[in-house]
Image (cartoon, rainbow, N blue to C red; front, side, top):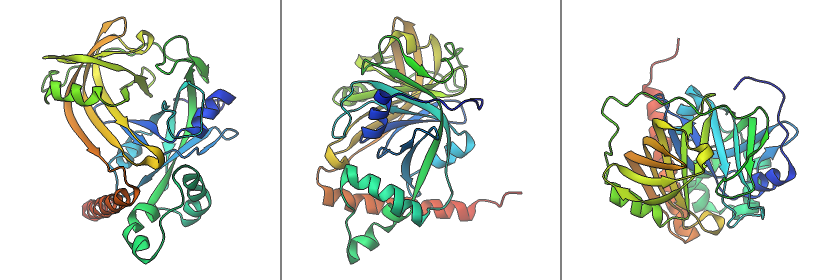
Length: 320
């Protein structure tokens, strides 16, 4: 998105942005598809500066590499459970993300720490926990999004007209070229549909005409050989075929009891909000509803992920 006047969002949007325990991030792949992932925003935002933020671990992710390649992202504030916001609004923030490549102790202690404690309680401390969770708590980055546009809907399923802060939403994007390996499903469709249907939040992501991702709440109505049958808000379901991401998820208070199912695939919109989604990849996890067990698992995953990231950095050729 081209730089311009910083959009100023209203109090209703700010309640959702400042109060949701989790949000869904959309980032763009090299093939101009979208990956969706749940992140922890902890209410971090600066209305005067026109920024919103979320945290991620150096050990989790390919997302930082993708954001470095294409900083256009979106965040959907869509779930009111276990947070502080009461408005039903669906709020979508689009903009450009940036982050420092190394964690900053002052930011973690003065900004992230107090914000996260409000939502998930104080961190576990002690000789064991400080060592076990070093990669999870200490090796974290703050990702900041310079907001270019905020869309909000009074309906949680994003039906009806949007209130727009920033430039008007671009027209529907043109269809994309089909993948070399075809558009059909590459994973078990019936299983993917069943898993998504039992989770309370299902969101679809694709690249808009202006190069910014869009995230749309959808319902899974069933499965057929061609893919999952989806229904979403007609105005936000672009006609034709394109690469798209799909995420279904749930969570409990203090981000325990997490469950997530993530897909990339091909979207074909039939019209009037109806679409067929052919999943090409799938991943997911289910975390225990016990905070101590969850932290043990998080510490292990963060250590493994951080080790992989450091190996990859060591093995990559130096930049010219």
